[in-house]
Length: 103
Image (cartoon, rainbow, N blue to C red; front, side):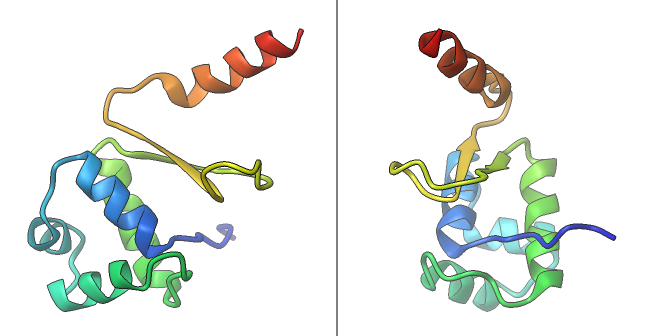
């Protein structure tokens, strides 16, 4: 059983914008109507209700190289996730740098 994917409109918009993809192109890429994608993004920090849509969007972001890492807890900055651009190796390196600073 796959864990529940949690996705917000802000995460979608940030990932899509970071990749330089329009709403129309991304909606077409993930197989959703543009109106649905616009509505999801407009909800801001509210969780996407449909698990199917969240999975489609998550897979779409992954396919265009956007890495969304879920945080186990809120750290006071950012939010429940971090987004990394295509080709960025920071997804693993950031945690390592933080661990090194604490030592």
